[in-house]
Image (cartoon, rainbow, N blue to C red; front, top):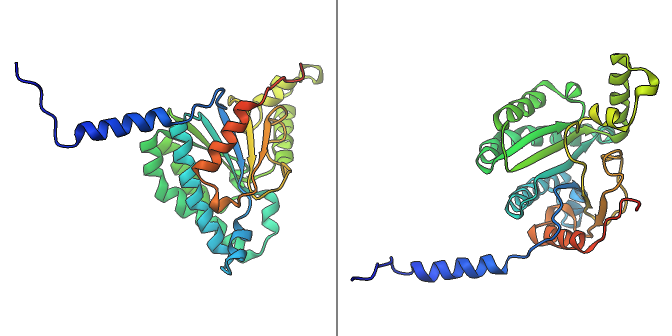
Length: 254
């Protein structure tokens, strides 16, 4: 019987692919929900003598790398702190650039997000954003609805305390009696209603604070601070955070 033939080099490529698969790190446990405070865009630009806008553009490239790597690693949910309500205090030019960057990035990236099975959600006060920015976000949310590999939460015009205020207002408007309010009810009225809480919070740029990010949801999250500025934060740095998470013992007060 004649032996099956293989295209030239196919067996060698298969062997390389198998070796690469075996060499991939295994993170056990793997966090289901990773939240990232993307810090350091402006410092990155200043260190290189570049306009701050270049730092934000480089930050978008970092988002692309990390998103693809999170999907590859099997992370189920990724929350990115893109623009806080406090950021409105920055210069008009910088705010305008950030809004334009988000609008263009989300429009250009939506087809790739669909291909990767990523579902986009917004955390924040959408109604306060300019109409063009709001429309691009809503279009992406609709287009990616049903993505089943990773949920991408973009925290834009977001603040943790504002989120809790909005939840309380919604509860009050619903007419619920005071003694019926509990943690489950509050959680059900947050922007993240129905989502798992973050298991791991990563902050880049060396800072050690949450900066008003998901302050209700991160009550029991593990915190990892990386000295790497966000535009330089890549797959290897994310793997370092995942490895550190896997080494920790989460007791939840027990």
